[in-house]
Amino acid sequence: MGEISWYLRFEICHDRAAHTMSINQRAYLESIAKRFNLSKAKPVRIPMDPGVTLSKDQGPTLIAEIMEMRNVPYAEAIGSALWAAMVSQPNITFALGILAQFIQNLAEIHWSALKWVLTYLSTTKDLWLTLGGDVVLNAVGYCDADWASQPHRHSISGYAFYFGGGVVSWSLKKQQVILLSSTEAEYISSTHVAKEALWLRTFVSELHSDSPHLVTLNCDNQGAIALSKDNKFHVWTKHIDL
Image 1 (cartoon, helix red, strand yellow):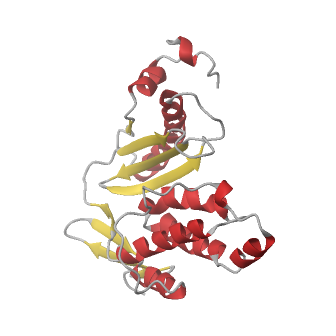
Image 2 (tube, helix red, strand yellow):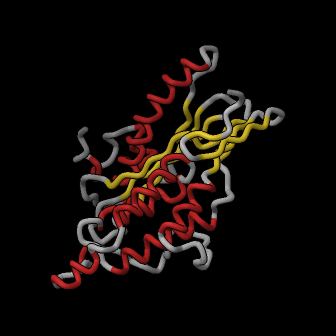
């Protein structure tokens, strides 16, 4: 059938000279914008408005308001954006992680924030996720944590892995426990990225048996870095067991 150019509604482009492959979901993102009447919305350049705080307490309490919001295709829009986040748009993962919490009892402010995300996808529809292009075969991971910034006070862990110059793996999850410091939040985030690194190292070894299989992990919190080297060094972290 020849060289692949389309797969599951996203476009694939090869550059043999640069040794790269690029992925784009422009047609899919245009269909989302049209589906939710956002084709002519004013372009936005960031996935979320940093000046808006979202929480479950903003949900409607009156029966009439609840019934009115049930007609909003919120869950449908979340699912549509989630497919883009899984394939080529890791930059909206944090926003979707926040907004997915309000499916059961959403308010107008939540719906407006989700339409902002969909508009951002439409604005950036011409961007490509490029893989390859780098002769270095080692994977590099970056992790971070958003410590207690949300009203529920659960921190958010996120990571992304680069391999050969392109992002190949990413994730964002709400931490299950409420932590007392940014060091603890970053340490748990480092744990998640380390688990993914172990799997990725095994996968890379299957592709390139002669590669050194070294995975470099990057963290921007000095306390978490020190704790990862000696987990018994500080009185404030002695409660961390597993």
